[in-house]
Image 1: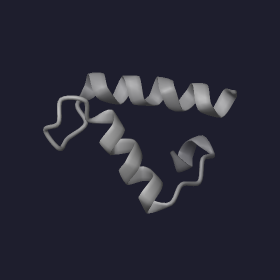
Image 2 (image 1 turned 120 degrees about the vertical axis):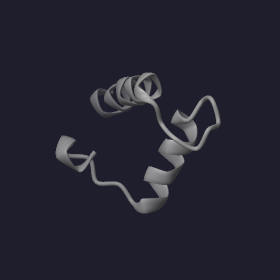
Image 3 (image 1 turned 90 degrees about the vertical axis):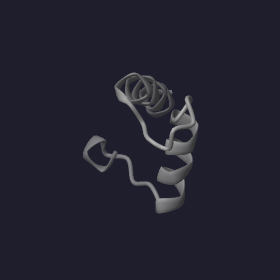
Length: 46
């Protein structure tokens, strides 16, 4: 996210990962990552 110009605390990153991990396996797979990034882009661009 830093490379996208978004400064986030560790807590914010952990929350984002928890929200992205929709299957609950403790990891963010490719599909979950894509959805997470699309949601982040919407939040950043307003």
